Image (cartoon, rainbow over all chains, first blue to last red; front, top):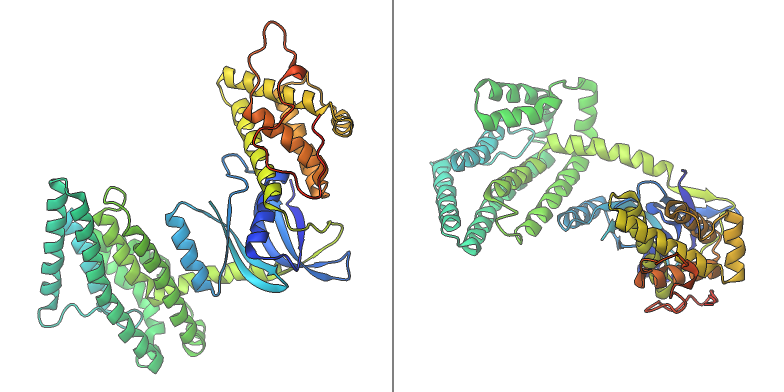
Length: 112
Length: 360
């Protein structure tokens, strides 16, 4: 099964708003988030969007819809966050970029 | 075991202290300092195991954390000296050659037959292949700041792990594990580790740059979800996952119950004309087996979600949640799923503004 693509508007209100949206998509698509990236909307003059990818395989035992979104600054920061969440048993879902309120942000996602 | 762990920590630092060009040299071998540290750690370990033996686990935890926090400043100090030397060029000129020599150092450790050194030898095996001098000169000239940044990052990761694990009880974070983390903290500040981590990063970053900006065509733009909408989707998917697990399991009772619930869901959904036509197109009926209904429901929801048909997904999810909360009783004598009590969703989150679910 290919990765299911989704695109979200550039002006999504907040990181929490993106988290809620992705959690809802995990639930509705019965698939788990695997990718977040900046994207261009070819159907709308290449407008900026946030692109997400969801994998329908390997959902058994996965707590779909239980995501933790955090903004990170550097790779060192991301690594530290990954280490902290690892100790809590919250695995890394993906690391990427997303538009939050019009601005590109580095986002790291864990599964709670 | 206690002395072994202690040896592991000290042997690690001593081994690297003999090769000051590519990692910080912890200065344990001056003016009887080794003995001082050794005695200090031994006393801490003795107190730790004494507390464990008498069941004073809280005290043991404190002793363990004290040992960690006592050890780390020595490593921090050595690291600061090391990177200062590296930046000033004193250690940089020859560290490249030392990377090659490193493998030899590990091999010597193995021949001495001590377990700690064997462990280190295994860890260092990957570097025995060495590198061409041209490549290494590149590193020397261009990447000293990068390497230092990487070492800083590696150390921060391990430090964060240690800080978190210090909160754990001794049952899950033993003295052995703590000593292992101290060694790991030291190793994180070595050029050896910086090289390997940079290599991994390069591979990841290459992939990321390829995926940096995606051009999406034919994918509808999805607006921000509301909390009730999210709760509805997640609540429904958890119930579907439970059905999936029960149908795949070996408990015939659970399988039968899951099938009855799924049949009841379809029967209820058929009362809505819009959903009924979707179910009909998918070839689903209340008489189908559980696995078929489940797979079709997942497909229908997924297809609707992909085109942002929130109204349809809302209707399906509300029935799933209602049925999941009030599972169908074992039918006797003949199954009539359509009569199951699923008309009124209990504790169902309010529908999304976009949706107009009809509860029949």
